[in-house]
Image (cartoon, rainbow, N blue to C red; front, top):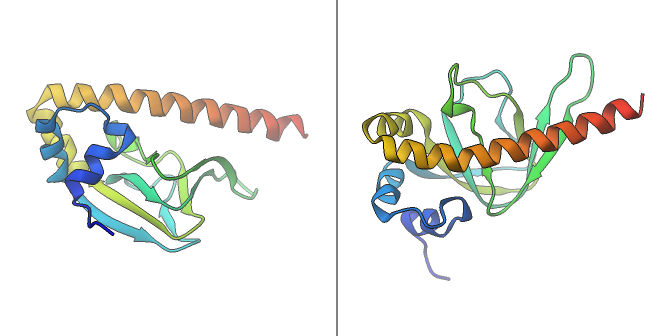
Length: 154
């Protein structure tokens, strides 16, 4: 099995398709490998958003936690997906929770590092914003559909 570098994993991730190599090198300087065991919370709604993740293997449940109810899974992510966009916009707190459903491997990108790089290079910031906007839109659609299902049952 060929060992992959962080740079290669980022270059090959669908989220960063066709991103200029200069930007990839900026991203790599903010990246690290991480692993999560099944059942482990990766992020919790309301906590500080300090990173985002490129999912390499495993499955992750995106959840909302209504008062006095069990968590509602609004989406499930897997290999090739990204997790976390709340780091982009103040107040930089998670709007959803996320829990590893399987053993999960990912690349974590440090949000403070990325925000600094985006302030220094607005073209990088614009590229990331365009890509994250699509993810935000998909997540909101998934949440809307899940809520329609929940309230249709009442």
